[in-house]
View 1: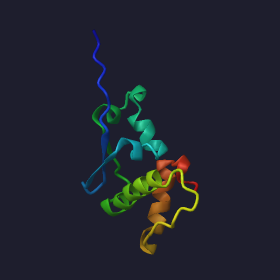
View 2 (view 1 turned 60 degrees about the vertical axis):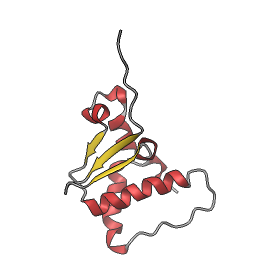
View 3 (view 1 turned 90 degrees about the horizontal axis):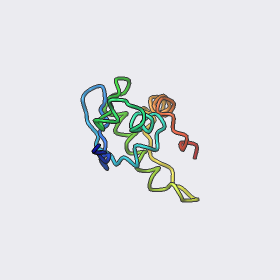
Length: 108
């Protein structure tokens, strides 16, 4: 008999400076790259452990990105979505992160 372990409701995203962000799997799956990493069919170590490390991004960028994941989840079916507050000094880094994370749903 093969036991199939149900994936955890939460996953951990880890920045290059060691900060760990525990987020709902549903929120993390907004990002195409993370969704593919966590897909049980992918055979990636991240899919088994529920932990994704990102050497490209520091904790400040990852924190704002995680905030966006929840923002997107909260307003996914809304028409008049309020602007998310993004500090000007993070704009370029967040654009790079959005491109890396391949958020098909980032086109709001």
